[in-house]
Length: 372
Image (tube, rainbow, N blue to C red; front, side, top):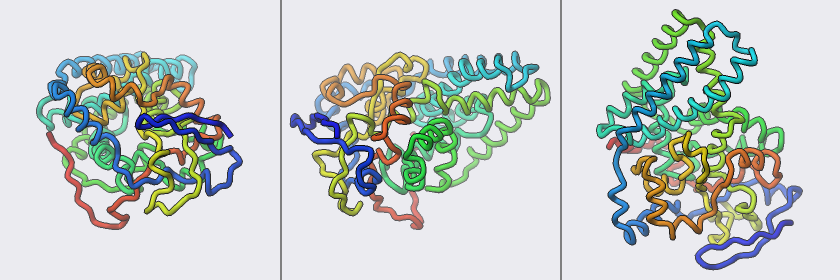
């Protein structure tokens, strides 16, 4: 048993984290709570104290030029490798160092676009996202936006937040081999899981995304050969695998290490299985140098508090409201997060805060997603 100190609301709690061999009913369960997600209340508190924060909201026009550079870089490397065997050392090395880093930046540029933070008009953001999608190799951008908006609006909801692992994942992957498998193939979990959780409406933007992506893929294969397309695909896979920048997927919302809390005296999920005093933080920020390659996605508490502040201004938000952000637990290393997640027994796929959705599975639900 490991003694952990946790300070919340100016009260310090001392408690023991459960040992890896604790009873299954103690370890294997999510942090169920009826508490609302913390970002809305913190946003209101920050705005009440710092109304000048409103001036930070809005799109960042210069982002599109950085995105264009990354797309051109990916096409340049794809052309360079057109005659190189995909399983050669040079191909894999370039796909990991340049390709995966670039495609992670592209994934997160699409994330910025999903919040309409590159252009004033939502349609322009959607169309530019389809262009930005090209080096990923498969159509992705059109589906990401509605699922990601659900993640923001219903953080932790068991039916609508598709960022949450399923009970199936928790049961079969909460061991060392399972966690290594999850970390290695996490891009596939994020791509496929939403289809099994929540269905979204197929729109003309999805059709454009599919047609344009496959048309460009066809041109790449026709004029440069299949190796160039394989470079795009391999880059996308490695970007969401055991890559330093991929640590943000786990770091953002998993409750790890000292932030883990005991799940003693489990109750039904309708009542919540953990006291409010011991309910862990469910969003974690990272302020390290990898933010330079990922549009400051590490400022994740700040982003969830104010989704319509562009990446360039998130450090200003943290500085303005430092008294709200400095006390929050944070992540110091994305590489360390991958290691700790995989090889520390107390860290499992169960380590997420969940809310029992008021909207039950099987119900026909219409959810309005923001378009401006």
